[in-house]
Image (cartoon, rainbow, N blue to C red; front, side, top):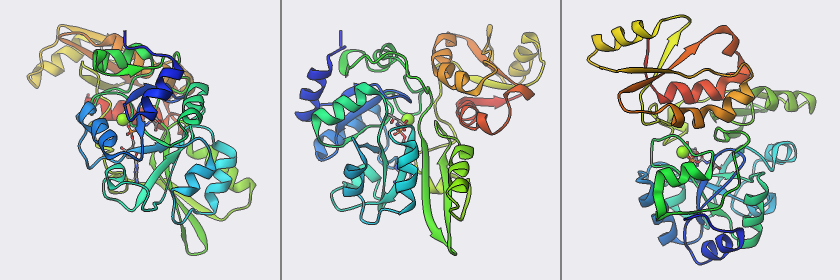
Length: 316
Ligand code: TXA
Ligand code: MG
C-alpha cells in the first residue's frame, strides 16, 4: 500500500521525492520547490504540460513574503482573514522561484493550507512545497487518499488525511493597484467566495474593484478540465433519461446508462461531495447528468458550477 505516515512523508519530501498530501481543498502532489529534478517529476507524474504553473504551499506568511519581490500590501489583510485556508495569492516572484514552477511567468501562486496534516508536513520539511492537485492532467481532483491511489496506483505515496472538507480547489486571486484602487481579479473561483473578499474590504474601507478574470491571466485553467472518466452533461430543469439518450444519439454518442448527480441544496456541501460523486458515477457507456435549477444558483455556487461546466462535454 502506498499509504505512508506523516514522519515518512516529511523524510521523503526532504529527500526530494514526491508525496501526495491532504489539504482542506483537494489532495496535492507535493515536492520541494527548490529542486529542479523534483519539479520535473511533478510534471511527468501528472503528464502535465509545462505551461501550467504550480502553486507553492507555505507554512506561513513569512515564507510567502520571502518568495515575492513585491508583496502587495493588501495581501496582508487577506492573509489575516483567510490564511491558513483555500486562497492562493498571485505575487511577483523572486529569483528563488524556478521558472518551472511559474511556467515562465514573473509571478508565483502562494497558499498556506489549513489542513492540520499539510501544516505539520510543511513545518516538518521547512521548505515550501510545490503542489498541484494529485490527479492526472485534466482529470477530477482527488478528495480522498483512495482517489490518489486510483490516479497513480503504487507510483505515488500518499498520506491519508481523510476526506477534504472544502472539496474544490482554492480561489486564485491577483490584486494590483489601479487608479487609487485595488483591482482584484479572481482567476479561479474556489474555497473563498468573491462575496467574502468583498465584505472584508468593505468592512476595512479599502477602495477596490473585483471581478472574474478570464483565460489569459490564468494559464493552465483550460475550458476542459476536472473531467471524470464518464462524460458529464448539463441539462436545464426537467428532462427525462430517455430524452438525454435520444439527444446524445443525435450527435453520435451512444450511452446505455444515465446517472443523475443530485446536488445538495447547500453550496458548501455540494462542493464537498462533487468530485467523489463524479468518481462514483463513472462507469462504462454511462453519462453523468447534472440538472441546473434555481436552487443551485447564486454567488455561493460559482466555484461548483465553474468545475461542473469545465467537466461537462455538453449543455443540453
Ligand atoms: O486548492 C488548490 O489550489 C490545490 C491544492 C493542492 O492546494 N492545488 C491546485 O493546483 O489546484 P493546480 O496545479 O491543480 O492548479 C493551479 C492553478 C494553475 O492551473 C493556474 O490556473 C493557477 O493555479 N496559477 C498558479 N500559478 C499562477 C500564476 N503565477 N499566475 C496565474 N495563475 C497561476
Ligand atoms: Mg488541478
